[in-house]
Image (cartoon, rainbow, N blue to C red; front, top):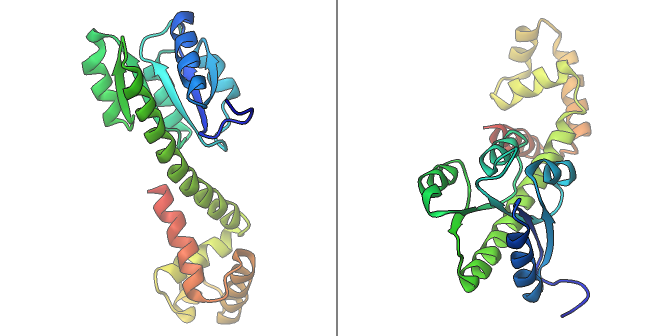
Amino acid sequence: MSLIPKKGTVYVVDDDEAVRDSLQWLLEGKDYRVRCFDSAESFLSRYDPREVVCLIVDIRMAGMTGLDLQDRLIERKSPLPIVFITGHGDVPMAVDTMKKGALDFIQKPFNEDALVNLVERMLDVARQSFAGYQQAASREALLAKLTSREAQVLERIVAGRLNKQIADDLGISIKTVEAHRANIMEKLGANTVADLLKIALGQAAAKA
């Protein structure tokens, strides 16, 4: 096995040490990097959303459950793909997690080949999701540079309002609108109105 795993990182969160050890042994044997946590709380304290990773988590744990952890990650708008480990009685619960965005669930005892295939699919999703997450973060950083007045002007530019209409809307002069418009273009690194719209509409889509 190479010193640097080629296939990506998998987080495992389970309060059962035997399950953690089993998954770590299996996945490291397939050249994945594995990081194990014995609770959702310890995972959350160390999770970095800037990493391209996937998560395997037990649905039932002492303290914060896998369901609670999923809710926390949703609140953080995390792009992290999740697969739940479930017992036979947890299947209806696991179906609900998929409605909230979980990629899949696996039942104990799990099939090793199926699990490895699922992890690879999760990491593919993670790479795609992370690219979108980075783009959204980049847009947010750009738009955060605008003053509240510039944000108001941009909102009206996106709505197709003309400079005179924007001036009337905001009770300012056309020259002031033009100055704001120039500042907006510079701060957002936009050379054309089309560039400006891509940034602004991309941000709106990310918030939708």
